[in-house]
Length: 230
Image 1 (tube, one colour):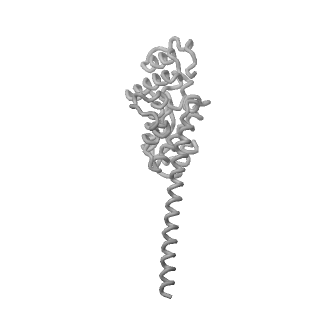
Image 2: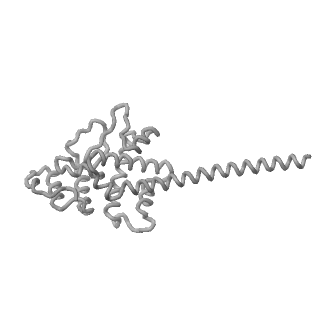
Image 3: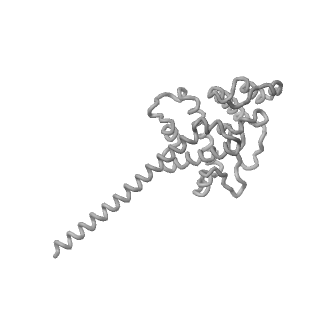
């Protein structure tokens, strides 16, 4: 009788251990699948067609918000942003230094790193509700006023770039469009213009106009320039 009781206890303990192991294995599998889904979705969000050729600023803003949400979701799953970008661009299969990365990859890495940092500073990542809204391409409502999305290179310089995702940035509420850029923003705008030319999103003539206008130069000749986005 005692032997039967001890066997039952042993089997019960074994069954409990197996159940716990199965639960942990299932959780680990779901976490792995969630990580794979984040990578796959960010790959789609950052294709050249999606990142440079949206229909208008609203569509481009939705892509930006969803991409920021994916970076944060990856971080919460244990994938640091740099590691996430490595997986998105299959960096383990393409060894090399940062300066050797294809221009599109560099644009995405730089832009989404800054956008994710800005979202954190603006408290857009503070809770699951806000993160869910971002993942749906919507700006969360915040008590002090919702942050806004503004083009780095303003539409008064070249309207087509307002639908180019890497030209959009997150700013505090009530930040106006067309504001005067500070020294850091001017440097970022110049770098973006040159990078977009390298990526063949805009042409040499358009870059020349952008750089001249950023320096406060006249708009002469702008009306004869080719369209901004190719």
